[in-house]
Image (cartoon, rainbow, N blue to C red; front, side, top):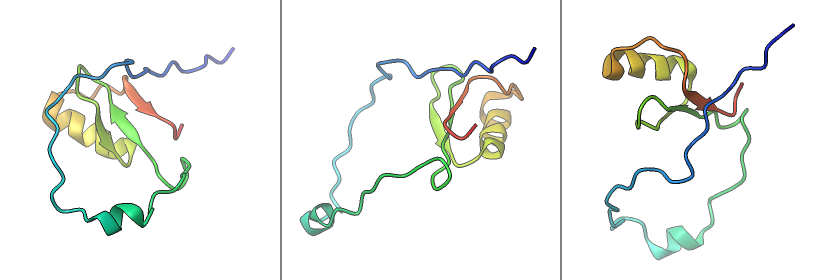
Length: 84
């Protein structure tokens, strides 16, 4: 019997960090409305949920490189994604 993988979930409240003011974006850029809805095929997202990291990456390979370098771990658990 195949087991359904259990994916970690983001906490409802992420740790706070100081906000930085955007001094480069113009009002015209904001009003241009470049945002759009995307999907997992167009925008892959992989989040390292080890500890309180929550860094975003474009592929599982990049998360694993980050884990090895920054967390000294090759653990493949605690990765949040909508691509798998």
